[in-house]
Length: 120
Image (cartoon, rainbow, N blue to C red):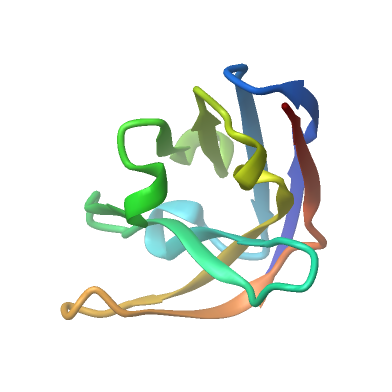
């Protein structure tokens, strides 16, 4: 499985960005996927998850601002990020993994990441 992210960049607080993740080596429709992020000096954290059955999950700090989606025909996953805050600054990673019924997600394949920087 190969994952290639794009769409990161520099944006002012309150702005928007849309990240894309193109999947190859598997069908996006058949896998669970997620966006993770890692800020400088911090551990990686799960931002949002989308299951192959259509369910989604978000970390509390992005609920109402971020939307995860996928276009299975394009084998692509997206993360629409609105009302961005400086604390959203991080490298964002696309993953393929397994989403369990207790809302636990285990990532198995990672993309190379895309930098998102939000200025105040």
